[in-house]
Image (cartoon, rainbow, N blue to C red; front, top):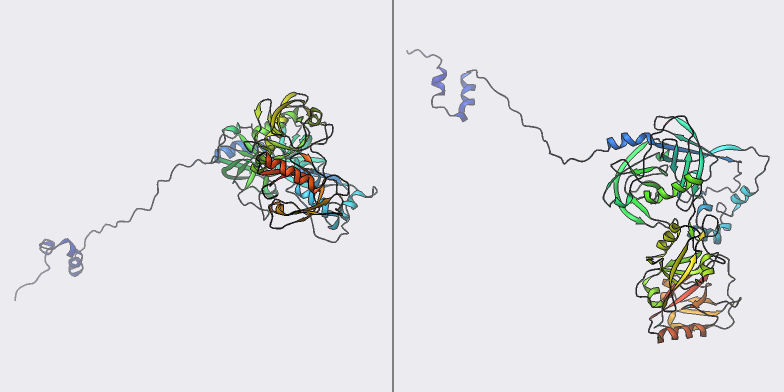
Length: 520
C-alpha cells in the first residue's frame, strides 16, 4: 500500500491554467493571498462655468430693501366687493392719459364698484378730516446705493404713494431716507440717506456693450424676503412694453418677482446694466420674462434728479403714431419710417411752428427718425429751449420747419387732449361706401362723418374701425359727408395710390388708419 500524502503546491500548479486556479484552490484547500480591485467612480471634465459668488459678495452691501409708508386716512369699504386694481405696481393716475387701461375705465369705470370713479374713489375723495391719520405700509421694493454719501436709486412706482421711506441694508441695518425726486415717465426715483458713514456703492455700466446672451445677476427683495440673488442672461434689447414714450427695456430671464422692483441687474464686472421695473406674468409670479431700465437711460435721469430733483426734457407737443407700411403707401412715402402727427397740441411748440395733423416727421436736425418712439427720445434728449430743424413730409413733398422746443417738465400736457366723448350719431341721410364695408352719415356737430355701420368682414373692421366713431379727414382733407370721402378717394386713385389715410375720432382720442382705395 503506497503512502498518499498532500501534494505540493508546485505539483498542483504544474500544468494548471490560470482559469482553473480558483477551482484548484477550493479543492485542495491551499491558502493564497487574494487582492481586491474596485472600479473607479465616474468623473466628468465639466467646462469652466463662471461662478457668481464673487460678484454677489462684492455688490450685496450696496443693494437695499426699500420700505414705503403713507400718511393716510382709513377708508371704508362699503362696496362689498373683492376687486383691487394694481397696474404692474403703478397707481392708476401714473398711467399715461392714452393708456388702454385709462381708456377702459373712462368708459366703464363708473359701472364697476371697485374701479376708478366708483364708490371707492368717491369715498377717498370725501374723507372725514376728523378720522385719525396713520402711516400705513404701501409698498416694498428694492434699490441700490450709487454714491458713498447715501444716494439710492429705485423705481418711481415703489415710492410714488409714500410719505416716509426706510432702506434696509443687507446686514439688517434700517436707515431713514428722504425723497430727492422722481420721474414717472421713466419710472425712476432717487432717495437720500443721511448718515455719518460711507456706503458701499456701485456704478452704472456702459449698456451699449451689453449683448443678448450675456450673463446677468439680479439682486433684490422679492416678496419682502430680503436680499435674494438670481441669475440669467440678457434675452433681448430695445423692448417696448407700452409703459411710456421712452420705452427701451432690456429683457432678462433671471427670476424677478414682486419686490424686485427698483433693484439692480449686474453684469459679471459688478456694474449695473439695468434697473428691474416690470415683469410679464399671467400668474403674478416669475415666468422668465423681466424688463430692466437700461443704465444709459437711468444715468442721465438720475443725474438730473440729483442736481435739482426734476428732469427737464425737450417738448414738441404733438400726438404721434407709428408709420405702418400701409400708411406709408397711402402718403407716397418710400419707406415705413418716421412719426405720423395725429394732432398738434394747442399752443405747443410744434403747433406754433406750423406742424399739422397728417404730417410725417422724418428727421430732427438731419437725424432720421425711425419711428414715433425714436422721435420722443430724440426730442427729449435735445432739451428745452433749443432751436431745431424738423423735417416733415406733407402732401407728397418734403419740407423743413424751424422749431424752438418747449420744456416738458414745466408744460403739463405731453399729449393732445382728445379724450372728450362725442355724442352718438343720429344719421339723417346715409350713404353706403359698400366696397369699403362702412356706412356713414352726417355728424351732429357737423365735424366729420359718423360711422353708423361696419361690415365685420371688411378690412376696416379688422383694423379696428367701430360703429359710433367719426371720420374727420381722408388724406388730410377734411370731410363732412360721404361724397367728400368719395372725392378724396378718387383723387388718391388718380395719384396712383392704392390706399388712403383715414383720420378716426372716438372717445379714446384720434388715430389714423390706411384703407384700400381700389375697393372704394
